[in-house]
Length: 157
Image 1 (cartoon, rainbow, N blue to C red):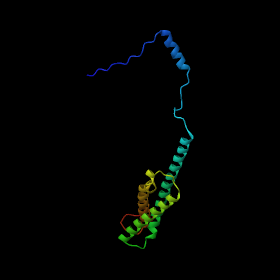
Image 2 (tube, one colour):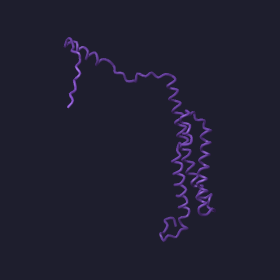
Image 3 (cartoon, one colour):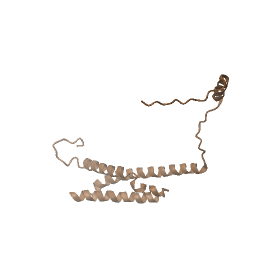
Image 4 (cartoon, rainbow, N blue to C red):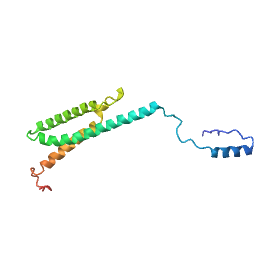
């Protein structure tokens, strides 16, 4: 078993001195702010960062909205196409709408560092794909619920 040595503090020369130091410490006001001073450059960087975050959040929600709208439109736009072609047409439509959102993001003039340039493409891509597919399937199911005869009564009819 390892033994650890205790650190010993220097002895106080006089018991009265230690009482004076403790009273002196109680009267001092504790420091509440960090020792890092806020320079105008750091304030500008914080504002720039929040502006970047706001624009990325705006892009995310733009893509969420486009996914919902495009998924709903896909149900009605490709009504005349049958079978496998309908699926591929809808996926192509999804990709085209996503590319449109990339151009919209580039027109937003986001000041991103070179390491974050891919954020314009990757921001909200998963949400976009899954929401598009979910809304497309949901609206297609709702629109065609009465035409399928499964033997189960439809709550909509």
